[in-house]
Length: 464
Image (cartoon, rainbow, N blue to C red):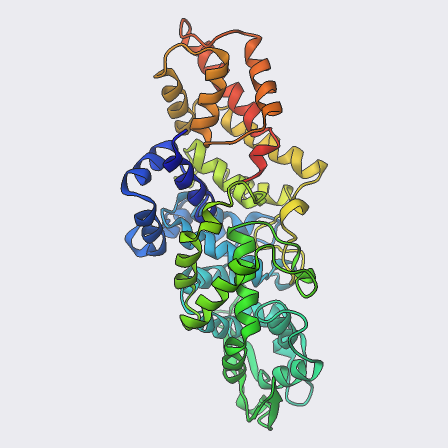
C-alpha cells in the first residue's frame, strides 16, 4: 500500500469523515501539508447548502420534537459539505458543550447553537465561550435564566468551570458561586415577530442590568466587580483551561482517553502531546486553528492510526460519504438522521451536560449490530456511485487470485489494516467461489460488494 495514501487517509478520517479513493489520490498529489492548510481554511471550499435542504424539507425549518429528526439538516451538512474540518469541529464542540433538545424542547434553538459552532468554532476560544454564555439554548439548558441577583443559580457557573474550561480539581465551591454571581442577569427573551399571535417563538439573549449582582467578587484569586466576560477572561488565562481543552482535542482527534470525569485522577495518555497543544493554545491567545495546525502536523498524530473507535456519527456520515448519492437532500434524510441515535449518539440529544462517553463505551452488543447492519446495507448497494467506483477500480486490476482480491478491497476501501486472523477469514470466504474473474460482470460485482460487507463487519473497521 502507498504510504502517502495511508497518511492522507488517516488525516481525512480524523479531520473529516473519510474520503473516497479519488479524493485521496488528489490530496496525495498536492501533499500532506497542503491538505492540512486547505482543511484549516474552509472558506476556500464549498459549504453545504442549507437553503437547498430547506427548499425540499421546509418542515425542518422548525422541526418537531421527535428523536433524531431535528438533526436531519445537520446530517445533510456533514454529508454534503467540502469544509469537512469545519464540520468536524462543530461535532467536537457539540460533544464538549453538550446541549440537548430533551430539556430545551426547541430544536431551532439547539440548531442555532450548532450554527454558532460552525461560524466561530475554529477561531478564538474566548470569543466562543462568550458567545456560548449568551446562547439562548445554553442559558435555558443550564438554567441561567433562573440565575438572579437575589437567588443565585449555580448550574451554568459550575459547568462552565467543570466541563467547559478548567476541569474538576482546579477551582473551589466558592469560585463556583462567585462565578455564578457574575452571570446574574444574563437571560433570554422571546423574539416575537410583529403581528404574531401564535406559534413557537425564537429566543434572544438579554442582559438585565437590574438583575445583575454588581457587588465585589473574588474568583480564582482575583477580586473585582466582575461581570460574565471578566470571569471568562480569568478562566481563559488559567493554565488548567489550556490543558483541559488540549486533552479534549487529543481525545477527539488523536487517540481515545479515559472518560472526562476521570481526568482529575488519570494522567493523559501522552503527557508531552497534551502539553504541546496546551502551550500552543496559550501562546496563540486561544486560537483553535493554530492548535489544530500543530496537532495535525505532529508525529504523535501521524503515528496514531487506528487508535480511536469511530463515533456513531462518524460511522453514519463516513459511510454515506463513501457510498455517495446523498449529496442531494432527497426524501429519507430524516430517517437517516436517526441512525446515529440507534448506535448511541442521538444528534442534538446528548445524555447529559457531560456529553457522550466515547471510545470503547460506544460499543456494546446492540450498538455493534446496528453499526454492522447499517454499513453492510450501504456498501452492499452496487447502484451507489461510490461502490460503482470501487468495483471499477477492482475490475481495472483484471482477474485476481483470492489473496489479491481481498487485499485490493481492503486497500481501496481504506486503506484498512486488519489482523492476520481477520485476513484469513476474509480469504477463506472468498476462496469458496475461487479467484475473481470477469466472465460475468454482475457476479463479480456482487462478490466485491459482499466482500465490502464482510470488511465493514470486522472488528478493525470500527477503528479509525
